Length: 130
Image (tube, rainbow, N blue to C red; front, top):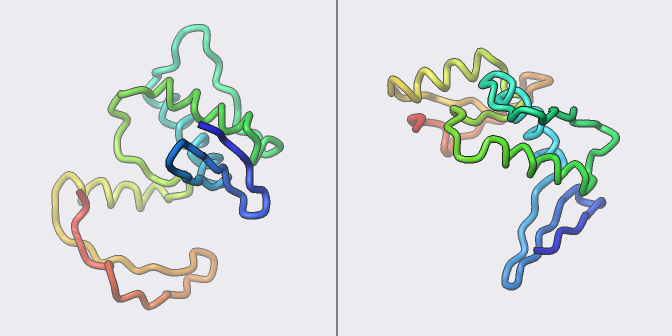
């Protein structure tokens, strides 16, 4: 598979024989941060391997994508818990995980994290966590 960089749209572009798919630079960077958190918490780092920090200077580089792939390799098929975006606050993680385990319906309000302004979404805002 060929991997190219689209700096204009901040995307890693993956070209296979019969498909093309993309992944954002920001998704890779935040996933590295989250993988670091999980690997440390679960203590699954193999002996002799050192966790390299996610460097902002490598944002949007093939080197950073390779780091992401290496971390996925460390995790492998282990059950590492529910996956959250790195920026998801701990309180929100706890609530979502509680509802995933115990059931119950939730109502979501989507909006701007900075300003607190609700986007007044009406679709796909009620449901269960599974």
